[in-house]
Image (cartoon, rainbow, N blue to C red; front, side):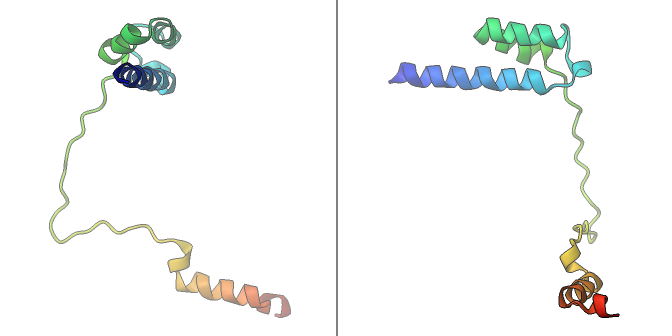
Length: 101
């Protein structure tokens, strides 16, 4: 049973790395062209995946936490169903009042 679990974990790790290589933009891949990274990860699953994570994966942008000033809250975007004018117009159109006028 433990060997099956280890095999599933390794498969998941390999699939994650393969998907990561494929979805990474070409200009952000480091050290090798993207197609070569795909081949390395496919042909040498465990070590290729490790090499991808350590050497080939792009270095992500630094995330800087900037808290909002107190008292100010970001306003959530409004949908069309939150606009009273839109709802009145929709109600009019559904009743067919636009066609008579």
